[in-house]
Each structure stands twice: as structure tokens, then as C-alpha cells.
Image (tube, rainbow, N blue to C red; front, side):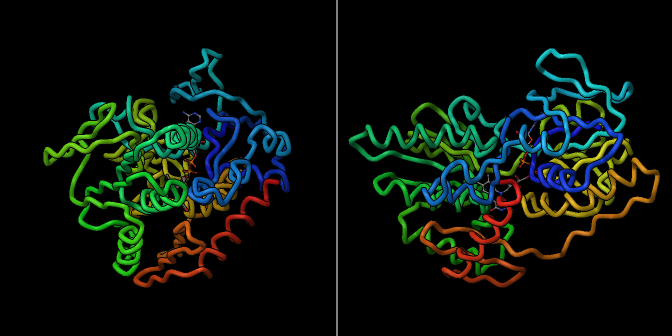
Length: 362
Ligand SMILES: Cc1cc2nc3c(=O)[nH]c(=O)nc-3n(C[C@H](O)[C@H](O)[C@H](O)COP(=O)(O)OP(=O)(O)OC[C@H]3O[C@@H](n4cnc5c(N)ncnc54)[C@H](O)[C@@H]3O)c2cc1C
């Protein structure tokens, strides 16, 4: 069995395998990074609340404990007819009877001129951390005000902007958001709280605008405006890796793997997919770590069922989930269905949940 990608679902799967190993199955994980990053604590790290080590899970070590072989390489495709996983390291293809894909996605930069050269994507996380380190170094060496632009006003963009602002008081921050309202996946009360907080902290918000070109020292918007920028962070919707569709998997218009509620790929029952990269038939789930984490239990159950020849179960996501958005001031916004609140209690709760998640891997 091959596990592709060390996303949130697979790290929990490995954790479950440490407790309850799969006997007589040769398992391999292929990951392009040695460590998985827990996104829930990422803005907290940017704001200086957590050390970097607090959000990283050592995949090689976890695999060793779970009796899974670890290969540090990037998957570049699959030969579905021959049931092979292809690596970009030039190593021989890996034969697979069963595959589970948990590769997440990266912010979509393909259609914006200059974005790949000049903008810093929020994912993969190590790339964001490198970009943030350069920003901090530039701020230290600069006598003027840095101009920092964040493209994308979803939860990730808002949380990152507030976290960055808490570290850099003398920079100018601007969020460019294509929709009419920030936090489009949240209720109007949460949107209102976020908008006011950004205003209080002098973060400029430009809505109903898109960055169409990124240049070394400026960005151009779709309405023709040009804004000066020293650093541009790209926090837009994630796009899945292109090789998923190129391999022949059935994918959505956006490129996510179409899976049944059992998490099996529509046209290949020996391939499972979970997390952001998967799109469950007739369900529209937010691309969030919460759902990736929740998929670990049904994924484990169904992989075991598949190996044992028993019946698979459907994954039934909850209708609403509580979102906690840190605001880098010892508080967090809680958003659930149509309700929202902002308080120190919710930061306390978020910190407890995130630390408890990470304790499982220490
Ligand atoms: C700034 C920010 C803050 C966020 N905060 C939250 C939050 O508080 N709560 C929340 O629920 N969600 C949050 N999210 C969203 C969350 O990060 C994603 O929804 C979540 O990471 C998806 O998990 P996943 O398991 O699908 O994959 P990921 O966590 O994206 O992991 C995929 C892994 O696969 C690896 N990989 C990719 N391609 C390949 C390949 N070809 N070969 C080998 N390995 C590969 C990647 O390097 C990565 O390690 C946040 C996102 C951002 C950007």
C-alpha cells in the first residue's frame, strides 16, 4: 500500500497504525517534505506565539513507529493501468495494490502573470516560512515602511494578516479580496468582526478586486490600479496538483479527485483520496484541516475493509463545524453556522485543541 503525501489525514492514519498495525501489508509513504506542518498553529507561529517545532510532525520518525517505509520524494504521476506510482527523483516506479492520496493543494497562481516568480504561496508551509523569514529580515534592515500585500481574504488570509501585523507594527498591510465580503465561508457576524479588527489594526482591505500581475515591486489589479509591494503573500483558494488529472483519475472542473463517500476514487476503487485534494460526490465541503482530520477514521476503516474484503462505510461529514480564527491578540473569532463571537476564551479553546492534536505526535 502506498500513501502519497503527508497531509493531516495521513499523519493521523499513521498514528492509528502505531497503535493497531496492519499485519502482512507492506506500506510506504512518499512525501516531498520530511515534516508535515499542522496549519492550525501556523498563524500562531507567525505571530511569535509558537516555536516552529511546535507545528511540525516528523514524518520519517512517525513512519518508523508505524512500521511504514518512508520515501522522501515528490510523486509526479501514476500509471493506473500498471498500478504504479511515479517519482520525480528518477527512482524506479513503485508498485501498488492500494493507494491513498492526501496531497492537499497549493494556492492557485497559474493564471496570474509573475505570481510564481514574485509572490510567496501560503502553501507548502516551508515555502511560506522561508518567505516570512525574508520579510522579517527585510523589516529589520529597512529604514522605511515595508508594503505587504496578501492576495485572498478567506480565513487563512485574514488570520495571516493579523498575525503578521502583530509582529510588524511599522509595515503597511493590504488584503486584496475578489469577493464582496471577507471570510466568504463564514456568517455575516464573523465577517463583521474580522472587518472591524482589520480596520482597528490599520490593515487596508480592498474587496471585489483581483491581482492580475505581480512584479518585483508592485502588483496590478484587474481595475488597472497599481500598488507598491515589497512582499506579496498568496493565500487564495487551493488548487490540486495537475498530475492527478493527467494520470487519468476522474477529477472535478477545478482538478480535485472525485471520490465516493467511501473516499474511493470514482473510477478506481483501489485508490482512496482524502483531505483538500478529494471532492466527495454531491457534497461541497470547505477545504479545511478540520475535515481532513475527520477523514482519518473512515479512511483507516475503509483501507482495512478493502484489505479484508469486507463492506466499506460511507464518511458522513457534519453539517456545521466550529471554526476558530486566531486574531493575534490573545483572542479568537469563533464561527459556527450563523453564530459568531470573539473572545479570549475562544483563543484558549483553540490553543487547547491544537496542542492536544500535536501532543499525539510527540
Ligand atoms: C495560513 C493558513 C491557515 C490555516 N488555518 C487553518 C485552521 O486553523 N484550521 C483548519 O481547519 N484549516 C486551516 N487551513 C487550511 C488547511 O491548511 C488545509 O485545509 C489542510 O492543510 C488540508 O490538509 P490535507 O490533509 O488535505 O493536506 P496538507 O496539509 O496540505 O498536506 C499535504 C501534504 O502532501 C505533500 N505533497 C503534495 N504534493 C505531493 C507530491 N506530489 N508528492 C509527495 N507529497 C506531496 C505536501 O507537501 C504536504 O505535506 C489553513 C490554511 C492556511 C494557508
